[in-house]
Image (cartoon, rainbow, N blue to C red; front, side):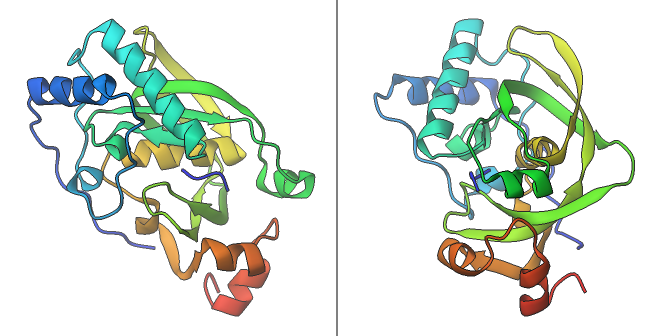
Length: 224
């Protein structure tokens, strides 16, 4: 996910060869350069990633988490999923420590999110509250669109140390959690977006960067 109604079903789960996943991870780690972020249109973004079950050892797993964190910071973004680096594995990293305008932070319920690596995550809504805001994606470079998401979610995941965790998130943190977990199941944010809201980053900065979406909704004609 970048710093800043019915949808197609993702491809069914693929039987990934564990050795192929391991080799892909090792190639990524062997390179001195940060990997490029895979862009929309690549099949890996439309596949249900393989659940992690030891395809790489603990040392390689932590090295992969560190490399993903470096990519996220370099982008910059607030989350990166392994498929975005061409690795079809249910692993994502999240972190949001950017300073944002206080008015925007208040409207969007955006608070700092400490670094988190999540393995085999699953989320479910807590309550019925929803929120609609612009969001973007590092794999759909140059664009943003309004997405309606659950305001509060429960996330179940495993840490790289093997600990099973159940945690609640709300506001912008919940949005990041949903966005990155969706990546692991072949879903891009555009699948959930109000397509009439789609805007280039330049147009968003020039016209739609207000904390809320009311002006964009009226002018672009979505979410009537």
